[in-house]
Each structure stands twice: as structure tokens, then as C-alpha cells.
Image 1 (cartoon, rainbow, N blue to C red):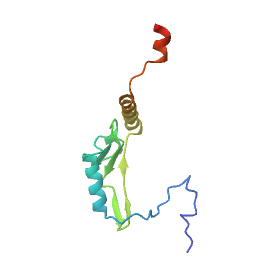
Image 2: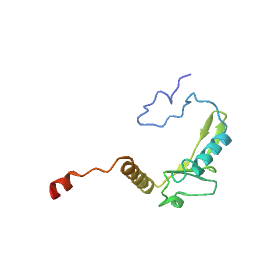
Image 3: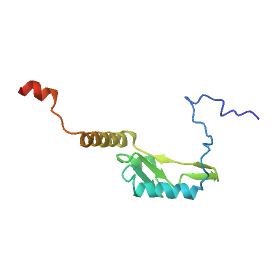
Image 4: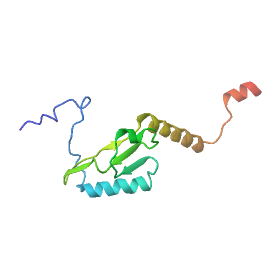
Length: 119
């Protein structure tokens, strides 16, 4: 049987395929996402079990909000995840996070402009 999906251009298409990763139930996937959203990824990853629409996420600073009601487990090895985001606001907040991280991880240095102006 010919694999019509696998033969399509990956750069232009989203092609469902197996990753070879260990099998996990949909409940396991939901639990892992919920844990991450309440712990190490809090403020970046969200989790909702409510009936939501896209307008519910306008100006949401999180990068991705997992929709547990819209996502489904198709089989023991295939799940379909739905996640929402405000691409402008969430992205802008991650840029600010990056700037803050860079500022805090490098020692302050004298800028070239201050040397030129005040020497």
C-alpha cells in the first residue's frame, strides 16, 4: 500500500506520523501537560478544561494553552492535541523574558557610548 501522506512535501504540509516514542495514553499526556503548566512552565504553558473559543485568549501572555476538551486520544499511540495562543502577545512576552534573562546573566559592562561621551 502506498503511503500518500509520507510522500508529500514536509515543508508545505503537516504530516501525521509516528515518532517512535514510548506509547502514552491520552490521560498520561494530559497529566504531564497539566503538571508542567502548574509547575516548571507556569506562565508559559497553560491548561484549560473549559469550553473555550479563540477570543478567550486575546492578550493572554502564555505561549500556549492546552485545550483538554478539544484534544482527543485517537489510539494508544496517537493523540491529537489542540492548543490556543495569542501569537502577538504571547510572543512579545517571551521576547521580554529573553531580554530579562540576557540582562541578568551577563555582568554589567561599560557601554561604548558612555566611554565616547564621558571620556
